[in-house]
Length: 518
Image (tube, rainbow, N blue to C red):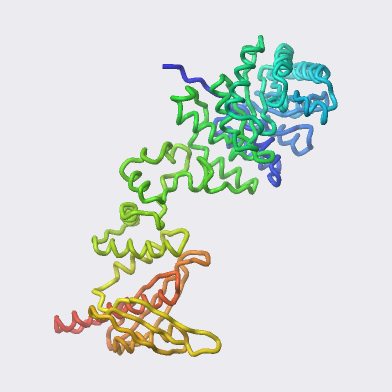
């Protein structure tokens, strides 16, 4: 069995991640994230670009002095002033690195830098040597490496390693490469750069084609030992390789990569939420590892498998990334197994008959709502728990109401096993429905209370209606819930009438008078 390699995690959330539009952080916010990154166990924190602004300079200085554990790094262009400024920000820190860069692609050298290849190579070597005058740990990046001539790229890498670079980072600056090509590039570098063993090989992949993580992992397979990445994959344009995806892929598929990291994965979700809250960049629900749906399951087939054995549909435990536990989402695709399990988790034990009725109610509700909340379930279950022997059952209701017509209701009920239909009028749609039902059931009860509340938010919220009716010395309460408030009102009224009928029948059988207040 091959020995597991340890891959270093170079986190650039505070530098490249901050380049996401709108993601700018102040010094205090950067320090907060840096401390969490340290708790999570990253090896290197790129704290910023010291020359870019006084704010970045001060943040780097504070982080270098106060955050223990990781190496603290500052980015610097291949210019003496940039490298001097990086040193000023980092000096005094116990573990520091200067990361300098210049492009090697002809596209960049011709159109952006206006340099020849020889001029760019000389500057790269001079600036690595300049940085080595300050620190022993120097990283060099040939920007746009994946669009550079391979022979020239290898020549530059050999020269900067000779000049003192201890890490050479291979950036896919514009997210142009593919996994096969990127892996081959790393193998070419290992083969054609004579002194490559004197430096660690890193990679920095952008996500313009959605391949940043795949390209990074391909580089690991090819022998790279450091990955540059960000929390939630934030960064310039489409972002960077996502730290959480890199870490959990290596850990979950050790059989493929024979590699792992020192990251304390249980801190991943906490770190993700901290970065999201500070930057204001919301994590998409279907985002791998840290998305809200990453460990949520609605499919009945999946739910059934999960309840029998977690490994059937989860390759990672949610606890392993600090995500709590598996979330069974009840919806129109859910099955009875998951529904029953959820109710038992909430403390409800229903008979098979009541469970089947409640399950059908949930399915009907799921066709109307995008998501079923715990409060929705409680409302549905309360109807089944409170439901007496149903003398009256709603078959259908149709109401008409408006500013220029008299409200009318057409109600069809199942009464003592037989269908009955009637129409009535009222002051409003609910009043019309109640008057019609009262006429059909010949009840002498009086409505003493009618309360409506929204159980959940949104325009598709489930509404719950509670009514209290009185007849002689009996007082009962009925509950009904539905996304349609008229239907909820009718359910509540019928629930109360069924209870009242049940109590009256019970009183006749026992020959006793019982005052009921619910």
